[in-house]
Length: 383
Image (tube, one colour):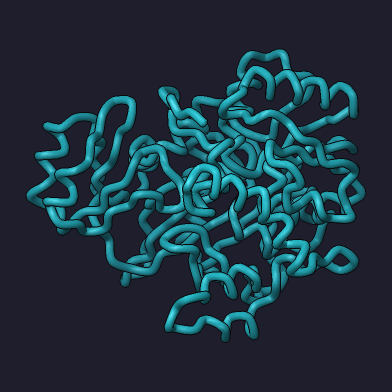
């Protein structure tokens, strides 16, 4: 089915939203943007047809839903495409059934299961996929049963992003300080040695339509990749295909996998949204065909290492080990013929997140999702 002419991309603060805007515009679509941050990164592109400020979906959900409904009707939007964690909030709005156009996302319960690090592993196992031993922790007693084995485990909150709070093979004394509960569950997962691999994919009604695996060359802390290179591996495609078929997935989806020395892959977690593998697609019409569910599986045509040169430079400030060589080898994700963003413009796009980080006394990474993140149905976060 062909995509509507007018599309709304949300989460406009993200580099993937900027890239998605460029791909959709190159395919002839009218692209609008929305975000709860003022003047987000993608808003500096020349290729969008309007960038709209909306209320925070996390802290003002009713106002956000009303604003989106009004924007869709006012602009004749035919499809809303989330890019970041606002997807969970938007899916909850769409669950009521009264939004005036479709959302590119699976139903809300499917998103929840994919995002929850314990339920995701359960669903992989139910699909017949190999998984690392994983235990859901919801109380002190469950945590204490894992403490003697802590040096062989990885602990992480079931609802989290960017490797937030992850403890890799910690001492038992560190684990003793955790407070898992039904509202704030954690998982204990067997530590798996190997090569960590990331995957971005598109699917339509349980069929894989685009695939872009990659490895991180440099990360912001333990989390998001800021320099990355593509790779190919039949084991990765097999895993992604089987998961998508088993879940009947439609929309964007991303995975963190571990490739073992024998070549097999194990799932670690799922991000049911866009991630950096999107940047390896450069043909707008081809990408939109895959987005609409048409054609064979789309794979990247070119394979240069990519990343944010500004982020690489910032990550090297105050560090003894230089990563400056990456700025020579990578293609900058902010470059696009006729629409490249200067470093000054990129800094302007970072400014609203930096202000939020200062106000909240959080890191830039934590602040980047503060007003859109989803921490489960019992999220009681406050400004």
